[in-house]
Image (cartoon, rainbow, N blue to C red; front, top):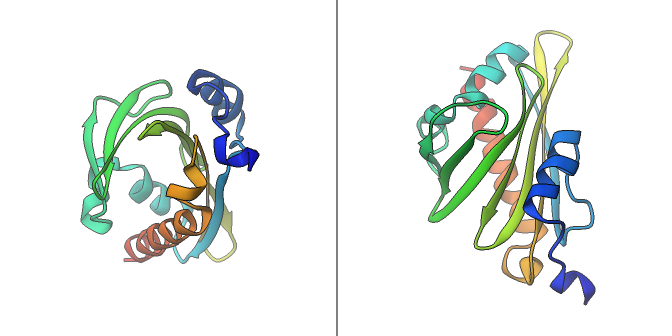
Length: 162
């Protein structure tokens, strides 16, 4: 029952003490981690994943609404389906990590995308996210979040392997 009302840390603390330090909020009521192995080198995967404006070409559910620069601390607005999200880049480490914090319907999130080079020019992509806010687990549970991540990772794999 406690998790039902969990608000998590402030957005600023979530950004500085979690996202910038390579962490999601493990206490959040909605947490998911999924991975995929892509048959493409890490540079290719990074090229596809970090081109936010290009997302709709391979994953139509994502659309960037406002992006001035892709830099740590920069804000951007994007849309996942009909949900409009305001996010702030935390970590941009080319070929290694893309992490941001965000707010949607008052819920606070940390999204981490980690790339790991593997043998034979393959790449493991791991996507982790925490989502906190009152009733988050009722309105948008971990299973639903994981399903969305797995669809995204599958689309990323398909695009990067072209």
